[in-house]
Length: 379
Image 1 (tube, rainbow, N blue to C red):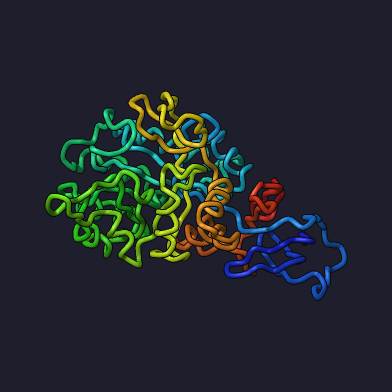
Image 2 (spheres, helix red, strand yellow; image 1 turned 180 degrees about the horizontal axis):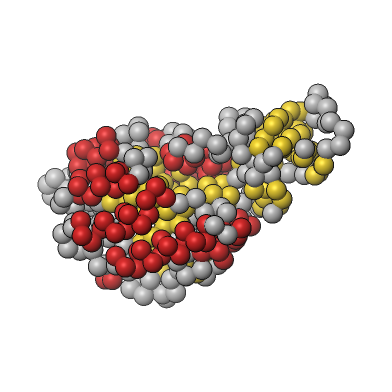
């Protein structure tokens, strides 16, 4: 048995100060305040010296890390995220790949998942293929502008199988329902997101019975709708805000460029703390930084000057969310762990509770990572 002592436990809805947590066979077997919880003889002890101990973070949407895309070097990217407290990660595969490239990327990452250094990879976030070609970085290299065609997408579905945990799509694409139904045949538990889209609320809501329950990088790459001159209509952002069953992904950078701090606070007020998911959406791009964003280091730009994802990790996104919105550490661990676990149906992780997997991260008061545990083992 392993005992983590002098921990400030970050539980789902409160703190437990000066606590001890026990781990057996990679599972949380118990915890309590140190003053009332005896430590059995023979326990291995790690003293956290007052660090905050929360559940390992779950990044459901990120394309790479440490200067590489996941398909280029999945183990390097996975190791980088684990060092930063992300104990579960879904590599995001972008629409810029054609059918053969998608299949090649999936196969390479599947092999990496079998290696010790790929242990935190838990499936795929398929950001494509069928998004709205008007939106997103690198959109000039989108090979999926034509009709939704089974002969083009079925090999991708077959290759990813049940590991395709999330499919991002634009509900306004013609014949998208057939794609959704075929994806669900391969993985009945797959989730769908509205992404890179200018769909109407009705088009979005029509896919909710099929499992659409996430708004991809909420308020980014979504269209504006105007009913008449100088009157505002409703589109993707309004539908995500309105529908209680849709979780809102947020990219929370230090300057509030992806999502303005006022918008972050508004989304938090509308959606509530149980429907927000923080993502890093790391993308590897080396385009020039536009003059208006001089000095920005935690987001990327493509060669046309479009925003191209971030350089974030989730502990930094949590810190930014606390700064921009006043959210507590309990709240941001929910955004970065508990909520993504729930939306994916991962009932074995995402919170500190008896019987859950001992994926844990120790941080200081500013979310700087001090120690990471994966299935109870110090990394």
